[in-house]
Length: 262
Picture 1 (spheres, rainbow, N blue to C red):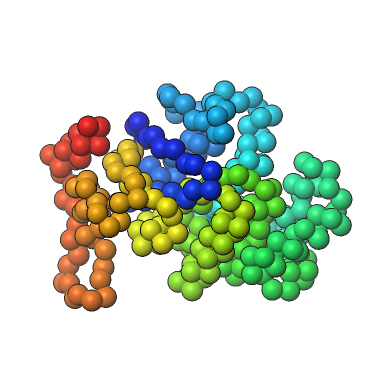
Picture 2: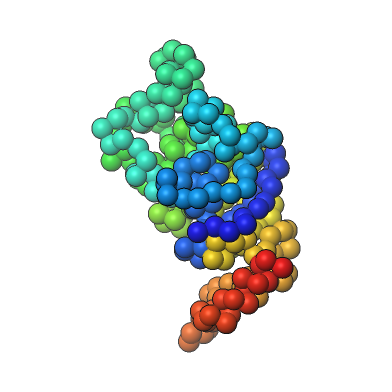
């Protein structure tokens, strides 16, 4: 669960939210979008452009999720309808929500597919998700987010399911489009190097709390957990029989929690 998570993301800024599995990274994005299960108890506030997300009615919340904020998920195949073509997936919202004609929507989709590096874009519109590789389908997902012209992108481990080459390509596309459009980005990842390369600052999560954040985190971490996390990275320059790990015992856990709350 989350406890006292607090950060501000400015317009055009990119923050990397890093930490181990189960630390609360993805739960944070679900909280931002008000997509938590009914059993969760929430306190505090979540504000988007000065407006309380928790106070939004159903219609305003739908606009937030459909237009203001775009989400790029970890596994693109889990978030597309396998019986709908790529063209239907990309143009449906434009036609239904904005009243754009099918022809104009397809023209815009082709343009964006070209921008995110999808070759033969017109042909791709007629294909189905199972006909595309993971990297290609993730580019389609990025195009679908950009079609909505959001102000903020939540990228929830968008490269985890991809091979190394595809990971690099996808992150380059996200970074290029973010800078070109002046978008804000919350990038969730396990990869400290990747987050540091594409984000203005990092926020480190441990046990549902942000224990350290700032532009200094990668080069000069101050929190003991962040230091342990950095020390657990493999090195190509030094051979180790065993990587250092953080010993999970109650004493260390309580110390980390106490320092996070200090």
